[in-house]
Each structure stands twice: as C-alpha cells, then as structure tokens.
Length: 275
Ligand SMILES: CC(C)(COP(=O)(O)OP(=O)(O)OC[C@H]1O[C@@H](n2cnc3c(N)ncnc32)[C@H](O)[C@@H]1OP(=O)(O)O)[C@@H](O)C(=O)NCCC(=O)NCCS
Image (tube, rainbow, N blue to C red; front, side):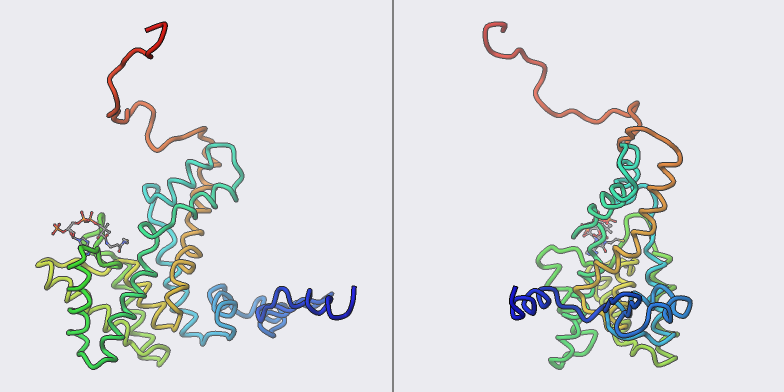
C-alpha cells in the first residue's frame, strides 16, 4: 500500500473528540486521568459535545435538566417498552434499546421541537417585533395549522412540578452570569400567548423547560432529542433492571385478564371445499 493510500485511509474517520495512543487517552486535549475524579458527568457530556469544559454554573444547570427528565413512570411508553422487553428474555442492552427506540416525534421529541419554536420566536424578535407580539404571531400561525404547541400542556399534571424548578434555576444561573435569561423570557411569552389564544392556561411542561435550559446554555436545537435520550436512558435502565429482577415472563401492556377490544369481521367460514 502506498503512503498516499495510507493517508487517505487515516483520514477516513476524522474526529476532534478523542485522541488515543498506547497508554494515552485525551478527550478534547485533556488527559482522561485528569478528568476522572475532577469533573462531573454533565461536564463530561458538555465537553464531548461542545469541545470545552462548562463553567461550574453551566455544568450544574445542564445536570439539573438531565435529572429532571430521567423517568415518568411505567406508563410512559419508553419505560413500558423497556420493561416489556426485559420480560422477553433479551439482554439489558436490548431492553434499553427498545425503550430508547420508542422515543420519537410524539413521545420524547417535544423538547427539540420546542427549541425550534423558541428559535422561530427569536427570529421574529430579531425582525423587530416585541417578544409578546413575536410569540403571539408564532403561536397563532401554528394553531391556525391545528398544531399542538410543543413543550406546553400535560395529560397528567395540571402544573408540571419540574418546569417551575428548572425555570427558577435558569433565573439563578442568570444571576451568576451563566445564561442571559432571554429564552426563559421567550418561553413565558409563548405560555402567555397560548393561554390567550386557547382561552385556558396550558402550562410549560418538562420539555418546554428543558428546551429553555438547553437553548440558554447554547445547545443547538438538533441536539435536543439526544440530550433527552441521555437523561431518559437512566430511567429506562433502572426500570429494565428492576423488571429483570422481578422476574416476570412475557408481560404485555395489560394483564391477560383485561381483554382488548376486537373490531374485525364476525366469525365466518373459510370459502372453499370445507365451507
Ligand atoms: C401533552 C399533551 C399530549 C396532553 O394532551 P391532553 O391533555 O390529552 O390534551 P388534548 O390533546 O386532549 O387536548 C385538550 C385540549 O387542549 C389543547 N391543547 C393541549 N395541549 C396543547 C398544546 N400544547 N398546544 C395547543 N393546544 C393544546 C387541545 O388542542 C385541546 O383543545 P380543545 O379542547 O380546544 O380541542 C398535549 O398537551 C400536547 O400534545 N402537548 C405538546 C407536546 C408536548 O409538549 N409533549 C410533551 C409532554 S410532557
């Protein structure tokens, strides 16, 4: 093989994330043995995704958002799917992957969509509208298209206890100069605009609040769902493990004594000789 083709092969995978040599592992230039025991896991996530270490206040806020979304109980499809898979004789990794694969545009995707919504409102503000006007126009356009506004409303919680706490932490971080607080203002304006348009309050939920946090911290919207998956994976692992320890076998979504509803054809003979 010529030198040129070796060079081409070396450049096939290019990365700025990690540099590994015998006896040496450097992440973004930092020796792993110096990172170990020095930084927390949220800081490591930040370093991996952003290339630099966060300030302590930024790391704390990212960690708070990741804590907030870990779990929403066995009725959340991602958790239920992982628990069902765990009773089917697959490994823990398969059970986790099953749960993660249930996270899509509708379940688990609202955070990223909400980051895009805040960006759309910010773009209208950049064009010269006030925050209130920008939020109202964006919400009006989406309601006109009969869309649900991502990050607002909750089927179970009249007020999502996670959202208020996260917004309070954003405010704290603003006081420390770690964030500007501008996306939090947009989020509250969206909540007000939605309430005014719908004639009822649909409070910001966990996805609306983590979207505020991630955007305030400068994460691009495209990373929103990935960050949510990191957080929810912890709950998925815990539930898959708990279920595997409980030892149930082939558990479906309901106890077999609870029937489902059949809506198909009435009993009928198969056409042909035997009919
Ligand atoms: C979470 C959610 C599914 C809960 O829905 P729900 O309480 O079952 O509410 P429904 O979808 O049955 O809607 C009930 C009414 O509230 C309205 N509504 C609820 N959430 C809404 C939202 N985010 N945007 C606009 N309208 C909303 C519905 O349009 C409907 O209004 P109507 O009575 O005028 O027809 C819903 O709020 C939603 O889709 N939110 C956006 C997605 C999201 O943030 N998901 C993450 C949840 S943690």
